[in-house]
Length: 412
Image (cartoon, rainbow, N blue to C red; front, side, top):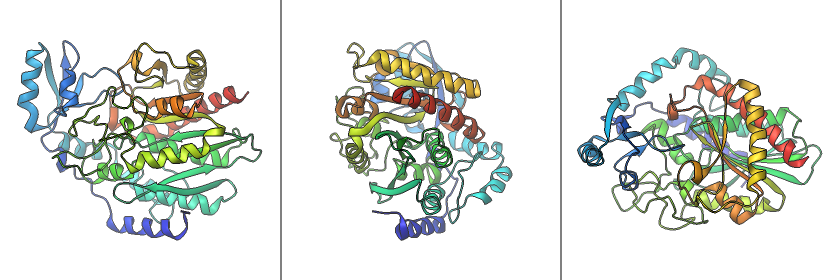
């Protein structure tokens, strides 16, 4: 399906609906910091807590009021203590809107609306209708540089858009960048949109076809804007009282390791591999480009780490491990040179935790793409998923410079 009138209609409809900043779904939810050890894994797997340290061993957790007493008991039995960092997450997020400086954001919003957007915002996160408008305007304004198509529909029927940045002197090599798979990681699609804009106006990677999915989980993203800022999964309605599938546990490669069978868990893998339309759409689009694909980069947050496979095993080494590390260090060196922010190159399972069914493992294991990574963007945890929007410009710059250096290293 091409962009055309379909996207225009969707954009206008979404704009008419508007967006609310209320977060009543998080009323009474608290953030706890656990001391004395790691959070018991059964609390994560059963959905009693939401670990807020997905880039490392979990010590910060979100606790819903209805589960607070059970979580306290479990921590006590494990001889763990905790302190409350945020007493009411809904109030905290409402106050954060004020801290962000709404008047400054509203002024910038004039440059990108749901009816006109020729440049991604630098200091404000963009709504889904703004994202769609930007892609539509880029495709219309620069048809020789970018083609935008829908690769499929989400659970709720939204388009999953693929931006193909076309090179001027093709080398028959391509890279794949995926963003927005986890809804609450807003910095991920923000960076992807800036990469698209840079690739349109910059020729430093002119010989490489770049395929970028700026928003892989549109339903979840919209939900974070209207209802629950900390929503992670897609919006699959399930028979239980809990909804959503973790799309980064739903890929068919060692499916189930480090994931949960409980729908209430934030890492619920789904009933079967590729059960979700979002992951099926991504899979099918990637399969079409697999022969020329030299790099897959999945953008997530947070932690400032470039993770290389495997996520399913601490003992089995991924093929080309040394090259994955060496090329990863090329990225981190260039990124730090750009903004003086440090990223680390680490192994997914060996240095953090088991997490199979993810994009990077599937790309390396099934597509045989030589270089496959998950990039955990800013920050180290001070703000986490609530990263202030004034990080967008610098974060995009470090990723742009790192990606350029990495691609040049791969194709040289």
